[in-house]
Amino acid sequence: TPSNPRIVQCAINTLQSLLLYGMQIGVKGSEEMQKKMVRHLFRAGDGPAPTDLAELTLWSSTWDAENVRKLKFYRNVELGKLLLAKLIRKRTAQGAFDVLVELGVWDRHVDTALLRSGF
Image (cartoon, rainbow, N blue to C red; front, side, top):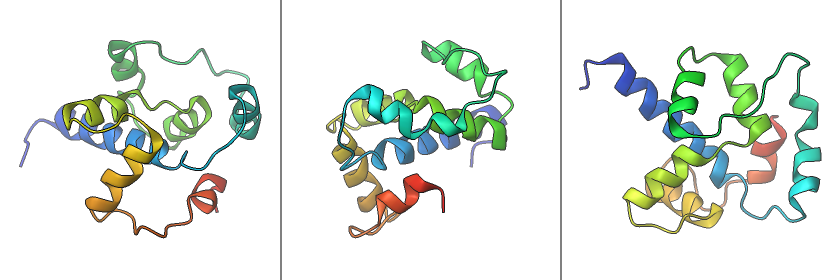
């Protein structure tokens, strides 16, 4: 077991990013239309999305419900993509979905639309 809490936190952040990426399977429409689907998660004080791994790590250093909301709003899947690359898997929503099914996190028939809705 890792004794460094930072390692555990990064592992959790990566899994959350992978889950978010996997939930995008079957989403159709332009990037702008997809942004509209999560616009309700925006808050006036939100800054811009993190642009690189160092910034994302700093941004997620105090992980709480507020950061989860921001992760969903910005749809940040960078850590998930990095994990898929390390596993030599497709860096797509389908690739993320397949890994999550193989890990037993999800069933092949999980309703990703319901997961995206937040209910």
